[in-house]
Amino acid sequence: MSRIKTHVKVNDQVVVISGEHKTASGKVLQVLPKKQQVLVEGVRMIKKHAKKSQDRPDGGIIELEGPIHLSNVKKIESKAPKADSSKPEQETPQETESTDNS
Image (cartoon, rainbow, N blue to C red; front, side, top):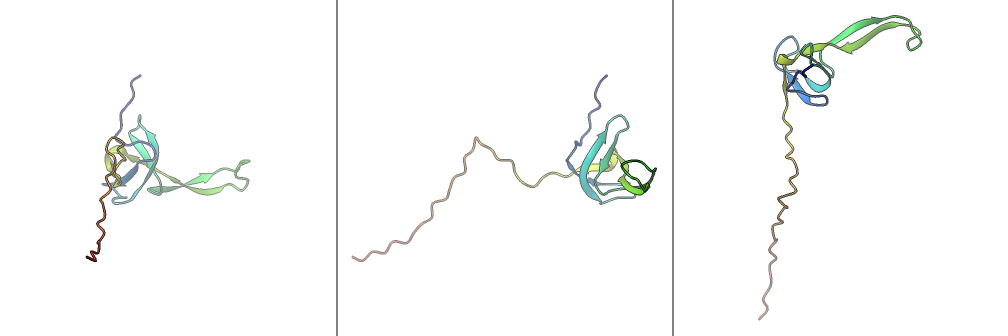
């Protein structure tokens, strides 16, 4: 089996670029490569009826994130530059005014 490569990974920040939830953004919770879909935190919230169980003794309606197609999301590049250990930071010398009393 070969792996299907995707442009987003779990915990990446993405923005929805098309569809009903356009301009919504959030963190990727799960990637479904075989279906070419992703789950984005807080985007496409769907309601699901839960049956009574030990976890949910009352049952009820729960809200979950629904899947979005990979082509409808774009990764947001982080603004913070990566620390590069090969280039040490150079401090700028601060000039102090010297008073000459001669």
